[in-house]
Amino acid sequence: MRKVTCTAPVNIAVIKYWGKRNEELILPINSSLSVTLHQDQLKTTTSIAASREFTEDRIWLNGKEDDINHPRLQSCLREIRRLARKRRNSGSEDGISRILNDKVHICSINNFPTAAGLASSAAGYACLVYSLAKLYGVEGELSEIARQGSGSACRSMYGGFVQWLMGEREDGKDSLAQQVEVETHWPELRILILVASAEKKHVGSTAGMQTSVETSPLLKFRAASVVSGRMAEMIESIRKKDFESFGQLTMKDSNQFHATCLDTFPPIFYLNQVSQQIISLVHRYNTHYGQTKVAYSFDAGPNAVIFMLEPTVNEFVEVVKRSFPPASNGDLFIKGLPVSPAPLSQELTSAIEGDMCPGGVRYVIVTRPGPGPVQSQDPSLDLLGADGLPKPST
Ligand code: DP6
Image 1: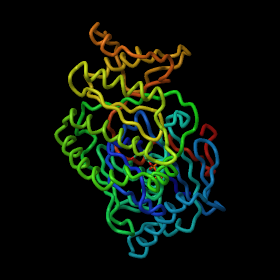
Image 2: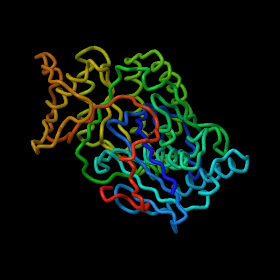
Image 3: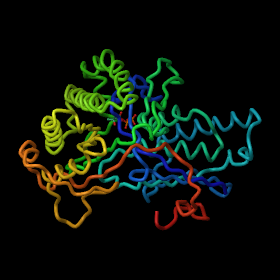
Image 4: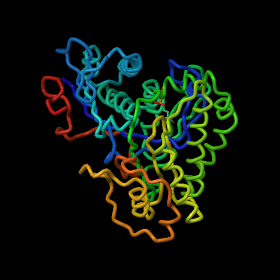
């Protein structure tokens, strides 16, 4: 049996991807840019085994067997196996041909609760593609394949700051992710995820963006006239580590994405009352300081992602606790990187005064930019046992 285990990160877009020009190949209508989050806090782990003994390809996700015939999963499997065959035919293989006809068992888990509504498909598909590539000894550009699992997954193939160039070709060969800066480029940058109390299941990204492409004139305008300028500005502000400009663009782009959702017919609402209170809190906080100290971004759900520089973390966490007093259910409210208590000045307290919403934020994850996918050398992380089936704990 040949076996590999790899981990891959979550990414958060600061210039959003929303809308495809080709559904099957997952080609976007605009380029996008994201920050890869650190795997110490959020990651997917995937083990894949290939064996002559296996009678069929199988997959287990977060402890439950899932449908291996999912078309996007099949695209990734097919594309990696195609590359592995090509490599074998060119003579540069090492024992790969022996496993190319073997079936695979795939087992994948997230170290963060899926119930929290944090997008897991990006880390999931990035991890699947990276692990398959390691299994079959495939090297080179893999973001094109990860993209075919889930668009945003192509950006999780790199660490740090990553752009996904929309490309022009119809076959998608130039629709790729590229690292803009490495994860150590901006060491002071911190990211807080405010997990909002979820109410109901919202419209998934795939279906949501499809309706937006069909019905929203604002989305067309955004893709044609807004994004390319913002991409250039965003890259510039990251290169210069200019938080003022980075933060403003991040908030404006999140807002425009949600505006296109409202412009979709029938409209899609991802932000709830808690999200709106967070937006207003961030603006009150920044107004108090007369500068952009914190910046929000929201994806296809109510959770807020807040960017800031390290010296702001302690105080802003205190501000969040004040506006969203934690429900005293004994659960840890702050997870991830350590946070220390910080006193709030009288002026700040009155500046941020607004609606209080006890329990509105379930918990906060404190993290920072991190590296791309890695192969694990630690056998204790292996999710598949010697029999090729998920270990009991997974
Ligand atoms: C709002 O990548 O989940 O998070 O390509 O259909 O799988 P599919 O969609 P997905 O969409 C992500 C949308 C977003 C913005 C972003 O990550 O850029």
